[in-house]
Length: 193
Image 1 (cartoon, rainbow, N blue to C red):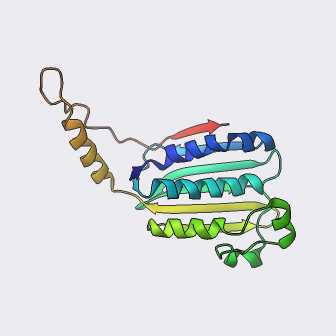
Image 2 (image 1 turned 60 degrees about the vertical axis):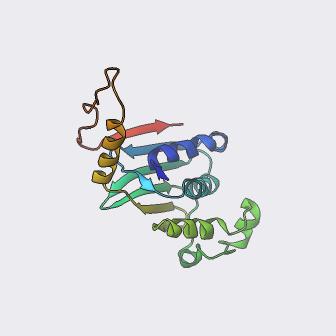
């Protein structure tokens, strides 16, 4: 399915609104205007986004900051989630994608979870020809970047033109005037929850 990662990310944030409000986090979401569609398993990618956002919420203290960027670089659409939470010890970073691996047993008991979330997230992303990377500094926060190959802009525009060309005006003539969208500089949509 062709999906818009910006829209999907915003929907995931809405689903987590109660948890965000409980911890009184400051959430900022920036979506560049020209992120091409991605052809992926929508429900799998939604599960990954929810997992990454849930982790950011869970491991960021009250009144913390979480920033989400959705954009496009080279041929990939990306989602970057940056928090100022408790972070991950450097020694644990190479193992965070292993099944059942938990960072610090005491933290695992306190926060809950099975140690499967990131392992499953990585599998889903790889099944969709993407990648997921984590950088973290204990006590400072974590940055997670998901990259997924985007459909080319030409492919998206050609597909949109075909769809629009099928729409008829009341006189039966084809309306091609809306098939061309201007491509200008990127801009950001800022959402505060």
